[in-house]
Image: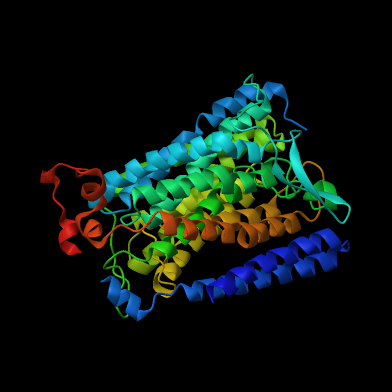
Length: 62
Length: 428
């Protein structure tokens, strides 16, 4: 899940960079930039979810 | 294009204020942790600042570079995407004669040291000295310079305006992204890799309050940090955005307004929730205002700086609580919220509120691209680098070291005389 989250983060940034590089109309560029950031937010959620400590790891640490 | 030479002495004076931000941050990190690891925090701050600054001087500036100096560029859809500098190592080829590039290298050494100190707050009380030094070497020598090149070294983010008509390009005068957000994202990565302190969360996931040991350090640190931040924002604006020295008045006012309004909002929120203002959270609010002001302080009207501060002050208690209660991230100094989240907000706010001498449309799109690059390119790089380093240089101290305190275990002595007592050791 952690790997997928970071992959989504990279993909989101690539979408944003591609939007800036390829799309000339500002409306389309804005739409794809926001879509890229939405993908990044999804990736962040996955990364956060993957780092929630499990009960077992918590007990082991204590 | 480089700033006028007559601005150079002024910029040099402002650069010399930046270490005060480092002092302020270090005092805050120290005060927000328990007394048994107080000296360790100070020692680690000195060590990581030294290592990050040295790594930056050895190879960092070569990769950051400066406008009109050699760099590597990719050609994407017919436009150059300048992605990394190609200067010489060990600051070779620089004339230390008040030239803007020489001043930028001096600014960069202090900025790398400041960025490296931010994660110490998140890893406090369990991050071994060797691990923090290894992490700061990578941050100061590679990650910070890479993004700094994109933003300040005529890199692809700075040229978004020139190449694609997006405002003036990504605007980040004082390093809200390049210093603060990178530091905040490193703090989050380190907190994840280290895991929470012993006793922080119960097996059911409920967090225990582990208060810091010295509110005086924390609050004095805030005051020192303001002076350092004024230098940071002013010098950055002159060096990288060609602001005239006369604009420093606006920069200082905006920096203060953002910090002050953030402090007041955080105090009001904590007063409403806990029936009295919380000193450490309010101090974090002040710093969040400083952080958020960094991106756009030379371009914001004072009223907008107030809004920037109000929002960042509201974000701090919400984010710190969210990170701790919901996401179970143990970040003793709140570094991920204060530097990471407030830094991102500052970057966005610069796009929403900045006013430039000539009309510059679509600035917000340039800011969104910069935020996307930070989260999508730099964050995985930071996490990956620290994850790999942790395999070679074990980050986490052994349980016995945590119980004794890192002062005794790693430095061999306590920070305070024995008579001061160690009440917190009895509590946890």
